[in-house]
Image 1 (spheres, rainbow, N blue to C red):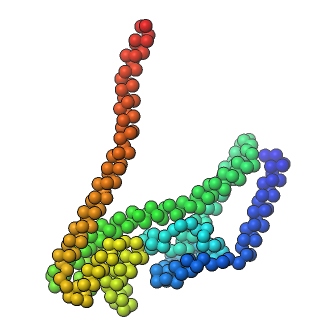
Image 2 (image 1 turned 60 degrees about the vertical axis):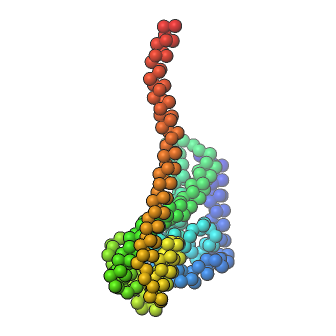
Image 3 (image 1 turned 180 degrees about the vertical axis):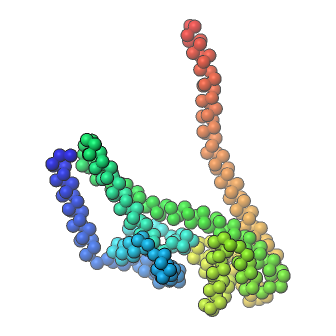
Length: 304
């Protein structure tokens, strides 16, 4: 690396440092949507979960870094992330912010480190290569947690929907046995030990001292997690709790329709995978035929 390249790199780093200092000193305009989301019941619940993590010692460097970044950086830099996805994964916004900052810093440092190793072994690279590479990799890794949280939340919702179908069947059996709406829901939620059943148990236990009816809590939980099937279940339980309606048949029909919908979605996904495998299998067959025909063709060419 020549002296001019070192001077350009030093000047770029100095200018970047001044830009970061000025960015930190300029007052940040709060994002109205982000403020309203924090003041909502879901935001208050996430803040309570964060306080519980701090009290339980489950607070690591990502939470500390995320709290600082949430105050220092504007809300629009975090990208499009759904509060429902964070709620499904039980990831607090500060933990998510900390992961993004950690990934972004890691992306900024990887390329300069590799460039330094290349310079030590005698490979000289133009100065724009590590600068541009670090910026591109930093931006890519900055948005990687958004993809991870969206993909993990999609899988978690699918698992939750499967467990919800079993939960509705258990509630129907409890109601058919003479239990009340609250008792049937609590007994059904206590059967399973997976995280969806534990989440339902926690929400039902909270209704005992919050003054919220169990069916309203189920509706709020469905809105928080982005699971519309919870709304139908809450409406059915409301009919039973407020009007005394017999809901055994309705619950069994609802759970059966949920299973049929999931089965249809899985069949459609399997068909899509099969269609994507058609081209590789066709190419493999052509390659196999080429391998079989090649010796004969080479023999004919040799004799000719």
